[in-house]
Amino acid sequence: MDKVRVREVIVVEGKYDLNTLKQVLDATVITTEGFGIFHQKDKLDLIVRMAQSRGVIILTDSDGAGFVIRNHLKGCLDPDLVKHAYIPDIPGKERRKARASKEGKLGVEGMPPEGLLEALRRAGATLDDVSQDAGGRITKADLYALGLSGRPDSAQRRKELLQRLELPEKLSPNAMLDVLNVIVSKEELFSMYR
Image 1 (cartoon, one colour):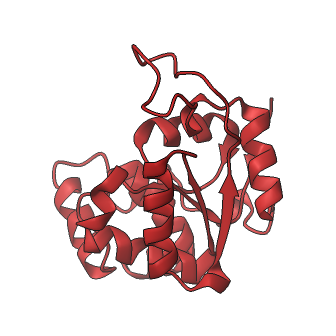
Image 2: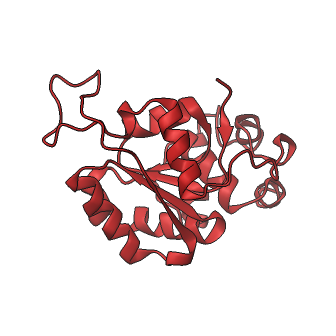
């Protein structure tokens, strides 16, 4: 199955949800780290910025915790910038877990690819968006060329860039790359280092 490009930023609960989506989609995916979103103002600010830039799709589990997180985000984001994707209630457990969740339902990580794509379609996701061609995307090679990876001082240089752009300093290099592709163009990034 070819990956499907999604224009909007997708907000999910955790890293296993992110991994599942990245196998199916070419998309920027941000995690709330479960209930961590309630205590991480910088993460919430990042999601707000992403929503203003590209819009967001909230895709949480269909259990009580998923709805608590979804409702928290709904209260923090401009409703015109948010789409809601809902996965169906399917009884079961994820393969990595010893037993089913409290409510006995599969979460985002346990959904088959077709189910995830259908949930995104129903939410009105912008699929197969080719407006940002590969030549315009910031790549790992660009980060290397700018000294943001592959050098002894790269971690410090990334930290300075994240501070300059008012982004959370705990973003991994891969997450930073996804975020950069939403908030700055390749040209803007390179102009910062001229």
